[in-house]
Amino acid sequence: MYPKRPQCLLCEQPFIDEQEAVCAPCTLQMRVGIPPFCRICGREMPEPDLCSDCSWRKERFFHRAVSFGPYEGRLRDAILKLKEERKLGLLPLLVNCLTEAYASHLFDIQIDSLVAVPMAADKERVRGFNQAERLAQGLSARVGLPVVEALLWHGASRSQVSRGRSMRLASMENSVALAPAAGELAGRTVCLIDDVYTTGATVNACAKKLHSAGVRAVYVLTVAR
Picture 1 (cartoon, rainbow, N blue to C red):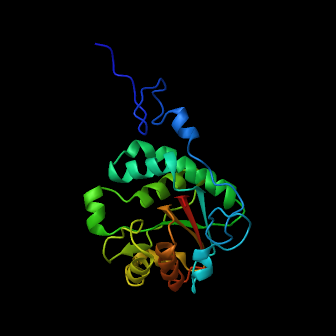
Picture 2 (cartoon, one colour; picture 1 turned 180 degrees about the vertical axis):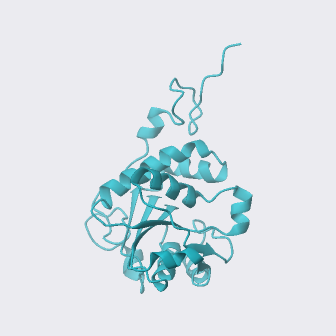
């Protein structure tokens, strides 16, 4: 019997490099965001301006959001397979994406700490992990910033990608709470970490809570937008 050749975790085709989880063609299909971007949320735009979501938002508690690329194609596949199929072998690749976005967009910002967007406890028990927390830990190892567990999710599970705007916004206000460690962040600049930025309702609610703990400024970094 010949040993089974490793398979790409995305396209499931066999490939040679046993050190990698994803083949080169799939990696190359993960499109990086192309400027110009919305000045607030980082969405790709025809020209530098505010997108419709950011123009509509009355209150914004984060300074700016940036991401590696649009939520489409192989990047979307990787995020979904990580969360829904628990393919943790994809984490290093997604951490690479976060690290590249951090270096491209936040290198000149004096970030003090990383904070992962929290997950509802029941959902985390089912999945077995919080992907935002794993991503934050991976980025921490790359850029040398501490991860502070400053937020808790005490509302209903946040299935935000598939929900409408009105339901999304209504569920946010009372769903996020401060953890005891939040007191460490008073006067500091924080970077919130999550996998996907949709309308920004979740990160905005998290940023609002962080400001109530005395955080000076909040930036947002996600794998995809």
